[in-house]
Length: 211
Image 1 (cartoon, rainbow, N blue to C red):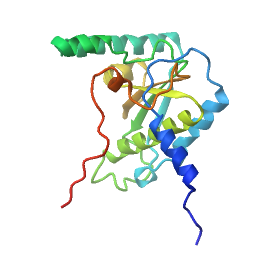
Image 2 (tube, helix red, strand yellow; image 1 turned 30 degrees about the horizontal axis):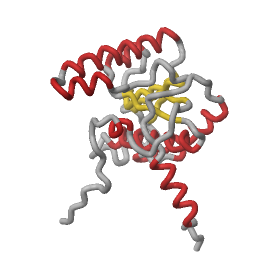
Image 3 (tube, rainbow, N blue to C red; image 1 turned 180 degrees about the vertical axis):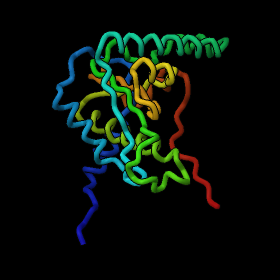
Image 4 (cartoon, helix red, strand yellow; image 1 turned 90 degrees about the vertical axis):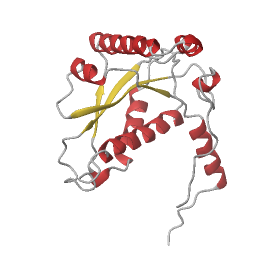
C-alpha cells in the first residue's frame, strides 16, 4: 500500500501556511502575474464538491464600471452596518479597514450555480446547501494556493448580494458566495487583523462535544 503520510517538515510548513493565510485588507497595487493567478485558480479543480457537481462560477471584475459599482455597493452596506452599532462598538467599527477594493489588482466574484444539472442532484436533494459549501471548500483551497505564492486574499462580505448580481449581470440561478480582493499584501501576520484591532478574540480550539 502506498504511504500517504507526509514528513514532519511538510506538516510544519502546512501548519505555517494555514496560520499565515489570514484575510487581507491592505494590498500593494503591484500587478499579479497572470500565470501565477491561473496556477492558483487551478486549485478549484482539486476541490471536493457534492455529487461532483463543481458548482463554482467565477466572474473576473476588471472594468472601471464594474469595480465602481462593487465599491459603491460596499460603501453603502458598510454605512448601514455602522449605523447598527453604537457607543464604543460604533467608534471601533468606524476605524476598521474592511475592504481592499480600492487597491487590490485582482478582484473576483465567486458564485454557486444552484441550478446546475452536473452531479445529477447526488447529495443535494436532501441538503441543497451542500453546493454552496462545496464552493466554500474550493475557495479555501484557492486561498491557500495564493498564500503559498506570497499573495493575499480578502473576502468582502459587507455587500448587497442581489445588487451585486444585477450590477455584474450574473446569470439567473447563480448565488453570490463572496467578493474577493487578491494581490500582494502590505504585511504578513499570523493573527487576524480584527483581533489585532481589538474587535474580537480568537478561540484556540474548536468546541467539541460528545454524544
